[in-house]
Image (cartoon, rainbow, N blue to C red; front, side, top):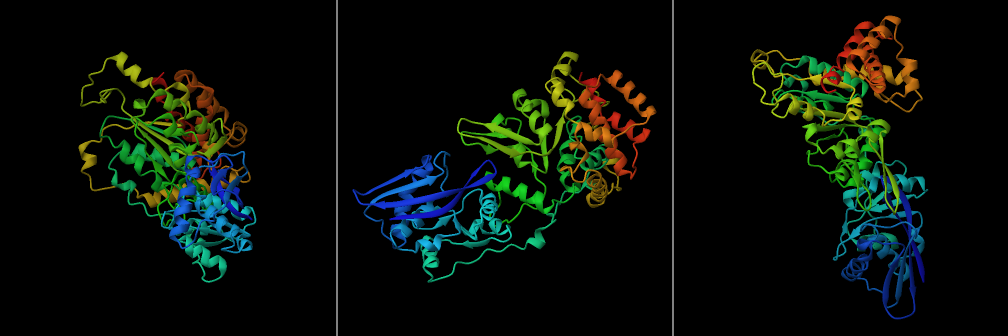
Length: 509
């Protein structure tokens, strides 16, 4: 007898349907799984066998063949355990086969019949809705994220026998629910406030501009000047995630297995800070079956690279593609997958190996050659992609001990959101939301300079030796500064300030 159960699997951050076909045929008892299963899927037969027995069912004494279609895509993970067990029960007549129609099933089985959570349930639920499925059966821990998808009934089950009782009509599985209205536009509380940072007003200004336009930032200064402290407060001045952005971020977190249990949506913009020993695959993503890396986990948020020159050169160079396109493409023999990677890059570094080059109070012990080699660890092409470069000097004692503080994060966020609203209106219908993402044609259209401004920019490019990419980024920064001040035109003061944020190009050339 043949039975079919609909399941789902994830490739990249996109899900696709998998038909779990179970056939019981006469012959010597055997359990074969076909359809390009990996090791975890091949081992499912032992988990399924034990789970059925410990849930009060018996494995049929037949030749059992399980096919995972489409058969030309490699299947991995333990999410097919539950649909395989239900397929065997349906094929043997223990549950009605028609009850499985229009229902997507995912879940890992424990040997005692308990159902364990799996990765990637949110993208699975999105695809289930797109495929016309009316309902899904998922582990209880995955219920909240699946319930975010409106119009899809989500049932949660903690044991295999509960699912069987639901299918035969003896009991009803509990429904998962999410308060989508509460989640739309919500923002998790951030206890890191910008006004806790004393001094460094020019750096706060640079971070405000960066947040308003989605620009990348590099902070250069001696140890203890507050670079990390400032970077960690950047998400608090970014606009709250929209519901669509939260869905994207949550899908990446779900696939990577970092979504907190019971969380329906990621409500705060991500802040990822990998150690400088991270590998290429750890930063950009990869593996035999590609998984998202730090750049994708920072999607719609901030990727903070502290001690930037200490990262391996090969690791830094792989950042070029996502910084330009906002996506990462990973090609393997089995498949090519795309991961979203639209993030703000924030780098921090010392000005030299000892950290005190140019410090008026501490003597630098590095020679000129050591300083230049240290700075050149960050390549020119990568530096071109960092819009704002700002010096972060040591904070004087008077500023550290002062009672006065700058504006709080909420107030700065209000300014940023007002600037973003101007950009959204200007860029409506283009699919982008910030000045930093504008194409060359859009930059020419929206960042026009006066003749006086063009002459100033020409002089700056000649003196600083700026590249064509830096030329475009100065236009975008100036446009963001004008947006913060509510100006429709880019004035000389806006342009002058934007040029000032490229002053490190001369030092690091």
